[in-house]
Length: 333
Image 1 (cartoon, one colour):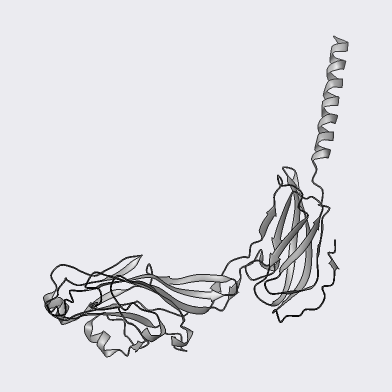
Image 2 (image 1 turned 90 degrees about the vertical axis):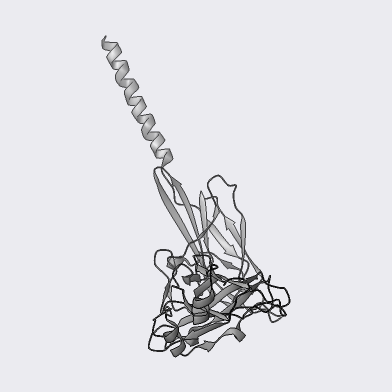
């Protein structure tokens, strides 16, 4: 019995020593990682080649461009935005070659009082923007309007603008065969554009479009009503109308964004633990500038994580046909 207890104690001690050794083996070490670039000056559109040494579990790449900068990984990127308006106009029904109407011109106002009546809309000053967009010229067309920068439309005092789509259907006449063309406004977006990307400020979910009808519509239209939802503004009247009819789709107040919060920047994972050793990587820049490129190499398991951060500054220039010979620049550990 004495020998049994002694053997048990020895086995337990051996097990504990084995476990301790196992834990020691599983400890996470800082990655032995290095990287170098083939030069310090590169052309726009030219792939920048990076040589990588070591075999960490993970590698994350930050190009230094807006939206992909290591310094912004843990903080929001708040920037002034340029504001754009874009939409698509789709025309349906009616007689091809003789649309009625051919589109819905777009206007803006800075003095509309926000009362959605014919009297208030008529009293406001509306400036035609239609010649700054591409609009349909016939029925059965789907035409992207293009993108218009609209910062200049907003008053300096911070007050809003209003947008208006003017849908005017002429009375039906047999000789013209102009029954009625339905006009749909789709893909409506007011975006804030920053170097980090695009943020939607208004779309049909929150732009607050309402319809204002003239007397001809109210007195003569019987069944086919316009409609607005989160995907389109549908402008229509009864087919073969017995009088001229006008519907104006007027937005809610639209404010210019002062700042756009694009959130923290993210890196691009280029290697995971199951991937083979990565010896090179390339990235192409589409704008000139000075960039701080960052590789974050990591070893990680259930016992912890260790990182190695490597940085390099490079310059990207426009392609003028010549460039300084690249100078090899070793990454620092």
